[in-house]
Length: 422
Image 1 (cartoon, rainbow, N blue to C red):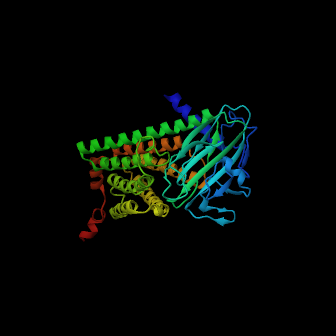
Image 2: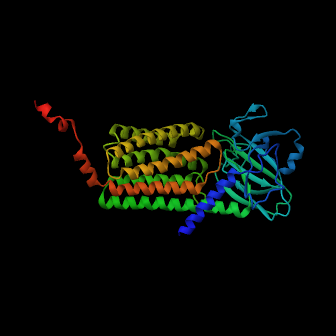
Image 3: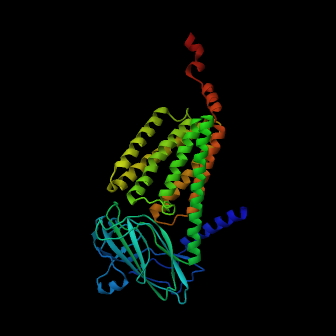
């Protein structure tokens, strides 16, 4: 068991090192020369940089010869968030990104890690459709939006790959791609995808078990802290299913893009709401009741707003939800540090859990801002450890302990009883 864990950690560490040591790229002028690439020495290469860009055209390789005037765009930046051909494009529309890759001789296969985009895509290599997510089109009524990252393999790639990435968006406030598409050694990329997928499934199962276990204990013993932890774990479980790797596709859940996106965004205020109830239940003296009412009522209101909001409001809402979530985390830090200062039983466990959770959050934000790959195994282990520490905190924060601390509080009359009686 220990050997397997060490192997996984070594494997993910190697993934980071390879990501940081890029010898090829970025793409320039719609072309990348990989003829000297050794996939075993450098198993993954980022395809960021200047792709050929054709606005309001859905083309394949054989169509490109007719387009003499070339415009270039960054694939990893949404088209409405960069200047392309001297102009700013609207969020709604469709486009074709094209890339020519010169390959090493005699390769048996090569794989691509294709990210989710805003809001659907068709991925072609050498005039062959390799994979798709939803359905691209030139009008809103033709488009079927869907978020689904995939790792796909091209057999016998030859000496030249002509990669076409068609993207349509008529729903979201961002259009195009916001992540890096990667090419790599087939064994390496498929192993990475499998490891991320398996660790994600394990995380969902773990959070689901905690949810069920918390509910069972609540119905038997009736401590509210277990109920709130169960609800918090459930909110996280739903988020893991409907975000990042979008496991709902693997689970056969036939949800439209708008429903899936709303569920993903709904989990943010629900996590804050249940998190506030949970922390206040185990640290009632440190988590002020007025702030508990504030966070619960505000996030209940935001839950309703997300349910009834149109897709055009998703990005502005996401910013609001993130600001409120960060405010909540800051106050939780304050409350738990107070608990540690007052030497509350188990406060150190809560501090460790909060540190782990904060580090995971900062890592997510850093990867989003810098447009770098997320090591999802690190993320999944971090979430699991944070939840485990919160479960452990309940062993200290028992109802009996809370009643004892409530009686131990020193009030004004206790300290200055003699002066008051004079």
